[in-house]
Image 1 (tube, rainbow, N blue to C red):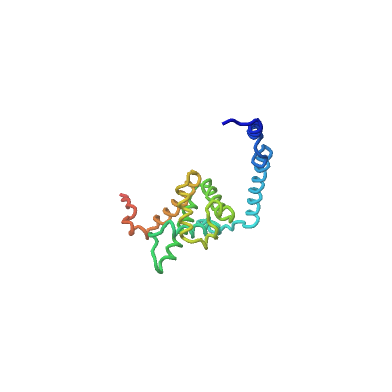
Image 2: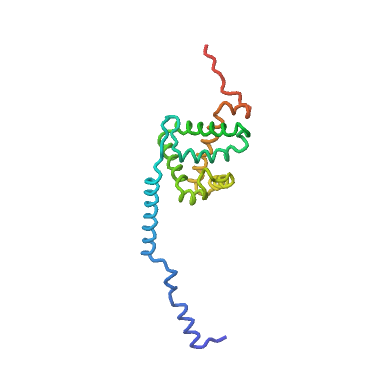
Length: 198
């Protein structure tokens, strides 16, 4: 099949013409987007610190602010699903687990506590909670299914930072619960051995 001169010229012009400018990303556009992103992050951080300053508890054995306590109170029943007692003892057991988690966090080195504070601040701030955790409801109103889905996503994430955050939350809750002597009989643990001093 032969092309006419006009067809060849039209085809050559189509091949030689640059792509439309609307699809092209210039260096200037990329820099503007980067500056806008940084400005948005700075504004969000400033807004978070001015609107919701954390209220620290006064006891030294409970270093958690109200946001961190709300997050842990929502996560504990999901992580300890099947281990927590039901019925009238359920609320007391959740409170004991929360107190144990606060005590466990109080015993951590300052650098680790600082990282946990940052994690709780990230999860408490509504925009980052929605983006990073995928939870649209505040922690006290979030369903068990949505919290379980969030924990599963972080546990199986391809990002090591999210997997590490999941492990931290998981270990704190499990350590707090199974460090409580009232749970030992359920798992067949007789308690620590007594040391004979003689």
